[in-house]
Image (tube, rainbow, N blue to C red; front, side, top):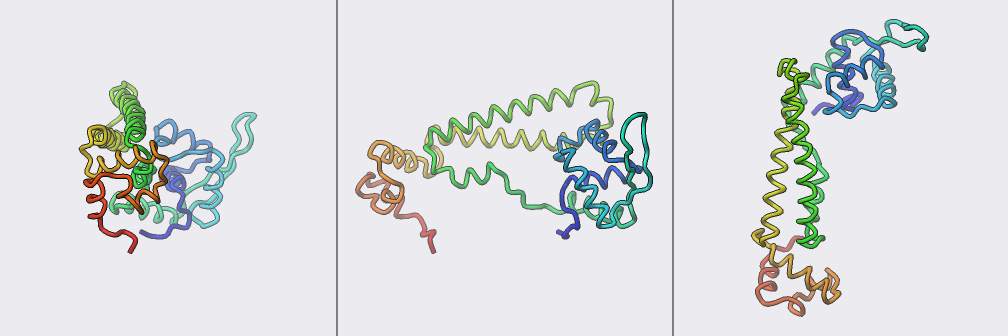
Length: 232
């Protein structure tokens, strides 16, 4: 993946907007919101001006005129430079054609999930599933709305992609919660017994893992002893 002079995804959206025609920043912001692109790229009006300044500094866009509408302040209109057009084409090709490693908060949380009790984890996963399902319902309603249906599907496939990802996450979270709830998750029984010991006897995690035979039954101890050493 190439190193970009301005790597903010909002910069990508600005370049993409200006590839259509010259615009001032407020016009870019309005167009992104009207087309729903702010659902795919984080849009902050203050950050937009910083991004525009950075793009201009690196020669990817240039100021072409200043306009005034009524009593409003003067606004600078920017256009894409040849370098900016090339940057946008390369960036777009990269986004679509090259998978990238996205570090999600859920993935980070799952990596340390055993620090929570199984019951608390199930509670939180159910909470997440409900929030995700609400977003799925909202997007599905948007997708059948007359306003969106009036547009060719070409212009809202990114929302379709988000919906597909949300549905996949709902399915995974729901399945994981059920496996934890029923102790069908491999290692789940040990996880539950360990948290019960820590809760009921006030045993610290380090003590439990250092001397499991003092607190756990033979089956749990044997399971723990068979784990590969992950400290090496």
